[in-house]
Length: 98
Image (tube, rainbow, N blue to C red; front, top):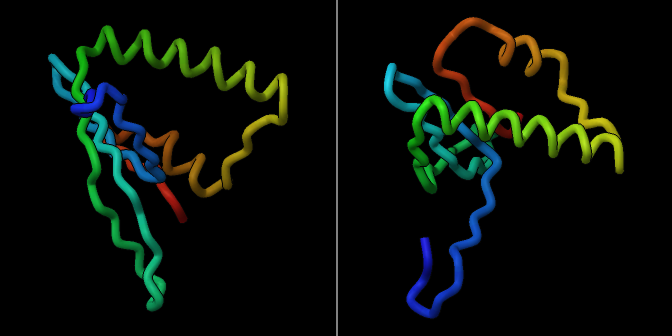
């Protein structure tokens, strides 16, 4: 999205939810905020839709860039419980702050 002044919208997100159908992959990006009572409230910021082919190309590029990041800086480690949840067979997954 390009703003009226010609700048590109810059968004930070710490939460992503994915869904898929035969014809598209949908990634809903949000911002999760931890409340005083310990509950997290997530506000959806933007929803990105793409073909499965586009999603596959994006995955390949992400893998390439994340490997280069790990080689240059430090391997990115995720908590074991998050890795277990993400490696499940469900078609709707969520990543975000813990």
